[in-house]
Image 1 (cartoon, helix red, strand yellow):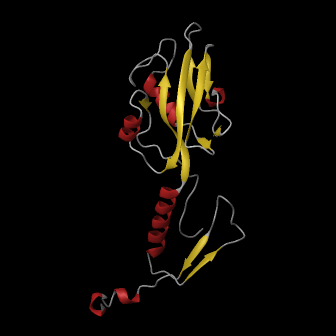
Image 2: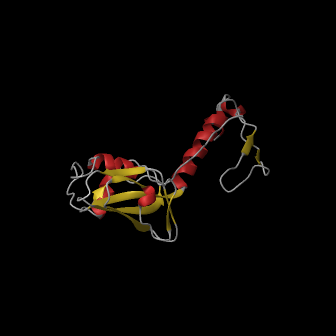
Image 3: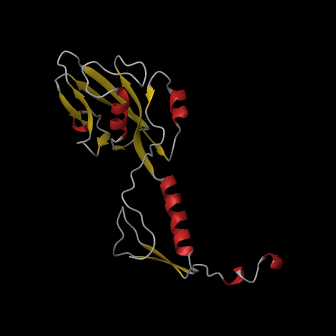
Length: 191
């Protein structure tokens, strides 16, 4: 075993202490100090910790969308300004909090000509929309109502669009790269 360690790696400093800054510690923020570290290892450790935290944070995201009368994702809807791909992109921007269950449905019933936002969604009590001002679609015709159902699922990390389609092939799978959590800020290094 002694022969595997070279003279160069023998002097790499490994963190001997981890300090937690208790003054700034909250439910959503923490400052930790590892020291001493060899030159360049601060960024390496910061990157590893950030990736580990992102892969284990649980969140909720829209995974499927059903619009009455729409049979595929490249359709257009009579009386709606946006086409289905644009509506899907708008739905992907919605940020949800889901408590207690693995999935829930949000519904939109658009009947009057106007812009519909996240605030117009009908949500069950355990599902909360964080960004209610996000536009979803604009209805331009009074006699063309639109009914939409959005499945919001809880989970960790990334799930491919193929897996979503396998579970429920009759609905439009809307997520191919959407994480289930929203990271507001993450940094490593000195202030």
